[in-house]
Image (cartoon, rainbow, N blue to C red; front, top):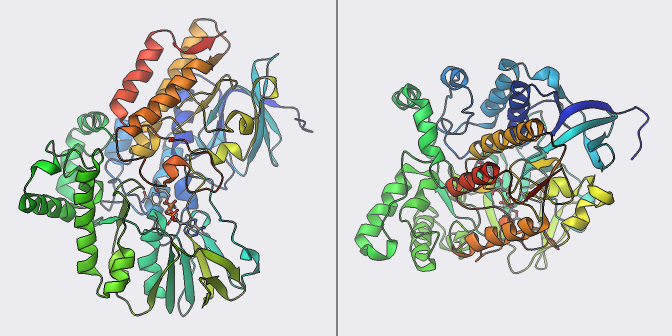
Length: 535
Ligand code: NAP
């Protein structure tokens, strides 16, 4: 790599100023390290900076989806809604940056293009598009597991005459669909949130659905003041109880320890109905075995299909909207008026499951021998999840090893934190970690603490580098798949498996179960970083 500007040096370079990067920068400074964040965007916030599509909001409750590292922060911040919307989450990220004086440690508009490990100096040299080169002992990739947008290679996409919007690259100025015909491709979490709101504005909305989505109601609303006061009276205790939950959240309504298969049909109906009324992810905890046993799962799935038939008036539309895959296998969607949107006369559903979209044309698109016309196209087509951000970089470890070669068969890693051949490079919330299966902020704080402790250990033991070993990596990847194979998560084509991107190697990437994972990471550290080489 070359650069006109000589590299500027810090202890720690962090890529990304989303929640992961902000948290890492704060922790690094507390530990007395010189640290710098390189962020491609014009401001902080990561996911919540980019995903500005109508209806974008978090689907973990606001009181949980926030940092726990500062009692003052969690006491003073007031959420307005049960599930915060994107503008409020972005304000929160900005508040954190200001409150902890982080802005002078963040280089904005500094897109990282690559990084190479200099074995002689034991340092990473990081290149940016227009901000020169930087050098650091440690490189922390906090670039996000869901931040590389997936734009399918539709034939003729560039020929479309109107605007094309990707939900993850939404414009900053308001987009007004009033009076327009809009086409939406994609019915995952982003599409499910955007469709009801676009439907209210657009003259006609045509949704192109490849896989029908299971969505449970959010029942969003103003944050209950009594609930807020109760949580704030012992916020630390609430955080601790959540950290002991499998997904790092939901301690207020834990999974029911009963099996769905042991309940009578009437009991099941009542139990599903009760959780449906509460809303959100807790629906999958109606019984302990919904995600473990396909028979239990089928009962939950059929309950949701029944709801779809009740909500959607046209039986054929209801049939098309009814998913057939295991519920929760693709990430469950949390909605506000999604299925009901299809009762509007201006909303049309086109099934592209058996006949894919052939081409985008100047006037719309063609599929199954038919043409559909619209003025604006929305791609709610998701992400090259977990690996996309790193694989789009020119990232080179020891002996020039390219990440694209290292990960040719899938994202090898140890503890979801480090990669053999890439010493002193840490991945926050990446593949092999629990990030995607948790309240990601819980996973981020855990990773940030582990990384800070690891660096402190190296320094007190006079070691320059830490690197995962190949056997530890192989065992870890097998462990992640083994855990998933005891559940229903391998029964569908999800982004967890890399199955949403043509040609991407199939490897189950996220790890289930936050508490055992946190214990394993702690255990490895306690034993002097077993499975790593320290030099
Ligand atoms: P996604 O879940 O991957 O959904 C993408 C959608 O686009 C799917 O319906 C997919 O169909 C469809 N699609 C992709 N390529 C297509 C093609 N060539 N032709 C037709 N359809 C195509 O992406 P997402 O909705 O952006 O969500 C991704 C993840 O981000 C979520 O699972 C969640 O973890 C996170 N997220 C969270 C929130 C929240 O917290 N509220 C909101 C949005 C997103 P197939 O299913 O058939 O592949």
